Image 1: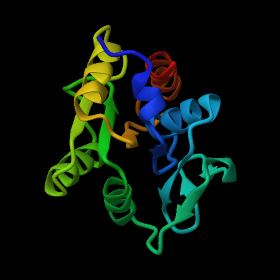
Image 2 (image 1 turned 90 degrees about the vertical axis):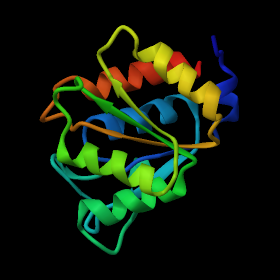
Image 3 (image 1 turned 30 degrees about the vertical axis):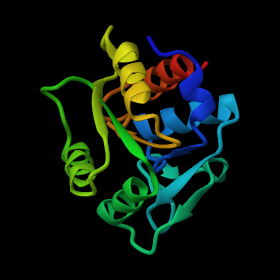
Length: 159
């Protein structure tokens, strides 16, 4: 099984800064001192208001989800999409998965609350060894608790 070598190799966590999985990835990066950033919609809008400056995101010229998602995928070596379960995948997550495939970037879809999630993330990182990782997935309003679940899972993996 992979160890903390993934954390030492990871030099950037990228995300769009929306509530939920996006912020879970950014919060884990902040705790561990991993450089972080990414693209957010013009106006820094999220479902809970303005995206905090501490996430170090760059405003995209568009306020639309798709262009900033394409930029985040393009800026990363790989993407992990955190969902609730395989039967509940939002259109935003589906777009992210398809766009990663179009850009020929490795993409893992993982059920954030699964007992297998940690092992799946470790195996993905060990296989693809990304230096920059895009973290995306479900929003907190649609999947309560996903932000904390993603942050805690990534902290376990990266420590």
